[in-house]
Image 1 (cartoon, rainbow, N blue to C red):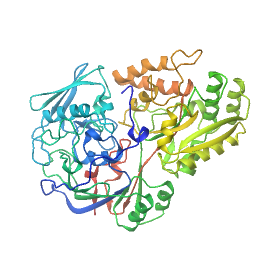
Image 2: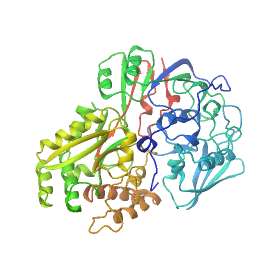
Image 3: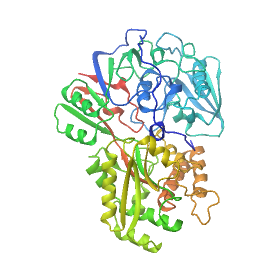
Image 4: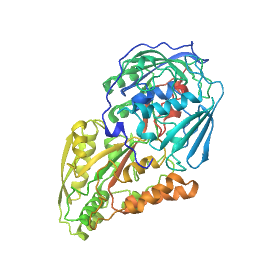
Length: 534
């Protein structure tokens, strides 16, 4: 999408809705292992009704209890068919999907095209503030044609991101006979058609899943019963996986805990490519400098001075890796232009030259703001290390300000900060979702690097917007070239954003657990149907 109003996980606090209850699934479990598994997590559920949730904690369960028209398989970078037998553009603004035959919800109801159209329409109708309506802004309408054909009419033609959107938080298919059209359904009553059904439910305490006997798709559950246990403290999560009280620890252990567990022979620490990005924003309205040339020089000097490898190794103990683009490695069309422009290691001489050429007197006094809680407790360590790195060049004097997220986000959008921390969790694993939301006009980062009417402002939006259109509507080499040029423009141009790190997926399991490594990819989908225990 060209502009995302998202991310709940990166931009707004999730607010819990719906009361806890008990849900009994129909059926006694598909053919699978008789052994059960227990998974621990600190991620919290907002709602199990897809119209009221847009967060990792809710999607963790939704990925396993619902089907989608299309979804990204484990280890893949592109969406594949799920509940759909075929999906394709029938005209530039018409995307048509045909459903597979004889699919049922866990309660026995037949899954039809009416359910699919109903699922997408109610997201817009309800338009819940915690919901995913922003993901389907390009949908003009959706209609069922008979029992097995769904037709999406799109506002913008040839939207190459649409197949990805069908597998996001906006994509779970719900039963129109169970879910109300204009309000959210209580967690205790949700019904899906995915590999698992909910057997019992105590919200954000303990959820028991049972293999769905009515599921006829390709993702057959390998384990008949899975319990999901919720933690408020990551230290307790670590202790329980270490002692064998749980089989899998998934989101979120601290880097120190992960490093410690690597030395424990009773568990396996598994890592995979992730899509989470951490970056700095340079606000051209408020950052130091007499003019935009000096502000740009300041951003470039910081880019020459940071040491991403030290941040990844010393602060995050290898759970993050250096990021040299807003599109992280592991996602299709990722390049590393910031490495080419600024180097893989700090270069204080080039930093000084950039400042001197712009007439900036050193050392420069700068304020850097970060949030103390939203991206984890390690943010304080991260930005203390950034401060140390910058001041070691003798070009900067840094004042750090840490603020709780609720206040931080409110102040950020009021232009209180000049240089500040943000993070991003992708909606889907396509390069567009790592660029469009940051570069389209009226984007949420508030960098003011291209304000309307600004005099003499080096505005890269004029160069970027046509390329955004190209990558959204074209395919093949033309789209890849557009992605490469946008990433290069970010590094060489006005530089409103400085990518620093991308997070790896980390899970810790008992030695007899298998299937978890296969699901650790940038989609952040935790595919429980792959898991088994010997």
